[in-house]
Structure formats: structure tokens, C-alpha cells
Length: 402
Picture (tube, rainbow, N blue to C red):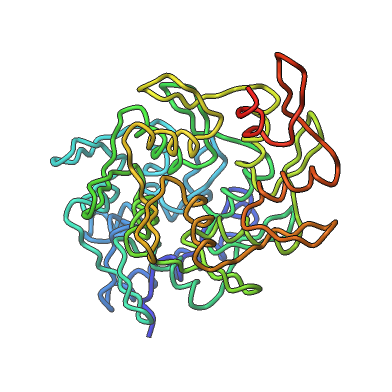
């Protein structure tokens, strides 16, 4: 049986709704809430997020409650128009507007508006998670988080976007979604001014300024800003590729790589160059292409100063300095600096010739060999001697001639 929470049984009225009730209805409401409090207390409900017991624990507080109940109107808060049936709840709500924070954590110094907020915060230090899901056993520090989690089991999505109809399990998820439509980015970095739609994204971004990389790989020592980055990195050690293409079976370590790969099947190319109109399957491919227009080469070798348009090209170039050859042939042991060179080499063992001339049918192991061969059909001779003007189909022939 599910835990009963105060939110399951409470009834809140807005100022306008309360004004529409007649005295007998208001009296009934107050009587029901008193009875509800007694019943929940009797079954052992912990009043940690709703300190309504302030009204009832002593005869003195009970008297205060009766006096507040005798008024025609509930306690009102005119800044936001929200109204409360009890004075103490109005006072607690008022703190949200004044920004008062009187409750400090003795471990980290963070301060909070209410004692209840402080108590909940302290669980981040103790790791206490008192609210267990009775379906999967997952535990939470707050009852409201358990309530939202349970919707993953029931499929309940009570918060619906009034623009597109999409529904969400929590109001915070709906708010995040709304920002994708409005473009609102209320969370701004106080160091560089960059703005974000979600507070969690700002929190992660701030680590780029302080250089904090709290998630370290226990195999190679590489550190990351986000835990998800570490999780993805670990797949380079394990070889895990959990994302399979349902059309060709190819597997990927990252979901975004699978998404991009699927476009090779659909032909979708959503990223278009605004200079030449050429379209690409991924935004990164478009960015690389744009450098062919601008000539930008942002990746520079710190040993020889040579610059490159792509980081991967710089990485390969660096091996000319280090002598690193990570790609080894499993048949003869020969090693290569580039994967593509290993692939070409392997064809010397297999005899595979995947590049065929559409003029004469002759096949080649390498695309460059096919390209040179095609010049025998077209008569193209792009390599010309600066001394005598004689032209050649291959650069090697020009070198010999010189």
C-alpha cells in the first residue's frame, strides 16, 4: 500500500476561490483540515515538509488556530495574490518574497528560509534517503521526489503544455520544456555571461571556469566535468556499445552517434551551409565544412606550429612527432599511425579491391589508385613541369621527370 502524504489530502484555495465560499463552507473546510491533521498524525505521518502541527501541538497554539479560523478571510499575501487558511502558513510563504534566511547548515554554511528546508538539505550530507519506492526499491531524500518517481511506473503525466499538448510527470519538466519553445535562458553565468535554460547546465558550465573535473577514470586517470562524460569515456576501455542500429545492426557507444548514423539510411541532412547550400547529417560536419570557406585552422601543433582545421587531423599529425603507431595488423604485425592506412594495408592480405572503374571495370585496392587510373580515360594530366611545361597524370611521374 502506498504511503499517504499531506499533499494527497490537502486542499488549497486561491484568494478568489476562498472569497466565493460562504461562512458554513469555510467552517466545514477548517473542520475537515483539523480532522485530517489528527488522522494523519494518528497513522504516524511525519510532518517534515508541512509544519501544520505548529497550530495544534499545544492548547495555546490550538487557541491561535481557532482565532484564525474565526476570521471571514484567510491570511492573504498581496504580493502574489495567494491566500492561506492559516496565519503561520502565510508567514512561511511571505519568507519567499522577503528572501529572509535564518537557518544555517553547520556543515557547509548554506542558509535556508525555513527549518524544514534545512532539515531536508542536511540529508545531502548524511546521504539519508527515507522514502523508498515499493515497486523498484529506489530511495529518495524527499517525499515529493518519490511521488514524481512513482509516475515512471504508473505513466501518469499530469502537467501538459498548453501550446503543443506534450505532457510531463513533473511541473519542473514542463517548465524546462516551455523554455525550448520560448528560448528563455534565465540562468546566467556571472563570469562570462553565458545563459542557460536549466540551472543544472549552468552548474556544470561553471566548472569550466574553475577547472574542476571531479569525475576521474580509475583506469587511465583522465578526469571529466560531468559524470555522464566519465560513463561514456569508460566505454573506450570496455568496448561497450549499447546503442544498436535496427536497420544494419551497427553499434555505437553514444546515442547521439546512433542518431547521426541513422541519417545514412534515411538520407536526412538537416544541417545546411548558408554559403554554398551543401547539407550535412551532423552539426559537427557542418562546422568542419564551414572552415573550407573561412580557411580557419584552430588546431595548432605545439611542436612545429602547423595548424589544422580538425582536431582529429592534429591528433594524427602529432604521431609524426611521437612516432606512435596504434593501429597494428593482426596478420603480419605491421603498425600504422592512421586507421585508414591499416585498412588499406589489410587489402594486401585479403586481395580485396573495392574500387572499380565505371569505364573499363578494372578494380583497385585504394581509391587514390582508381582516381589516377581514370585519367587514362579522361586524358587529364594535372601535374605540370614548371621548367618545360610537360604534364603528367601522376605526381610521381613529374618528380622523376624533374
